[in-house]
Image 1 (tube, rainbow, N blue to C red):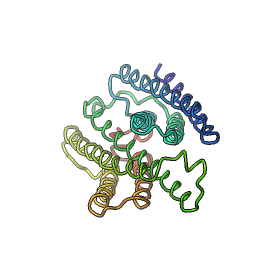
Image 2: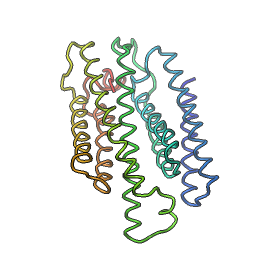
Image 3: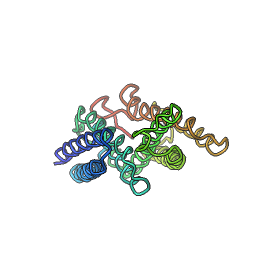
Length: 281
């Protein structure tokens, strides 16, 4: 059942992406509303998929690449839906929906079945706590990268004096910079909690807070990178294009840490079914 919900969600996100693309070409408000409705419907069915999987398996669904990437897509859409209460600019949806669609398609290429028997460490309540913080931080950083990309594009339009339709439908530079500035400490806060909760979980499972596992090492590198961004924002007053470029660069670091390390470098955080180990986020 959860797989059916997942497939429906992917289809709804794809339809929403097509509708938002049509909006970018035609700029009709009714098209924009339809795009959001499909995203919202996809979010509901996606949530149903995750909850059903949790109910059937008896533990938080985060043991395979399928689970991890699906939950990441869910987090991106959750942040986008929440942002609609702050700024209903449709261009955010035109970026969030395709990103979620791509993530769902990538997730569908992996098996959703886990190895049996289930590793005892995965039944710990530290799993949903740790993973929720990690996914929340990564989702916020993804939205920051979206805002950064829009900032670069909007600034380029202004400098080239191409004040046309795209300039009008994009959020203002101030709005995008404000979004970036407000999201940064939130994402950093969740990232910090994710690392701390992971260390506590590792201590309860293996008797050691830190083992310099590849994912742990790259998570720490990511933490220092975003700590530097926070310092540059607050102490040095960096804003505008510099902050936008850093947000985009940080997103690629997040993606490598989240997916690349697990698939390429192995360790305790490797996905079940690929390396025969457990995934901690």
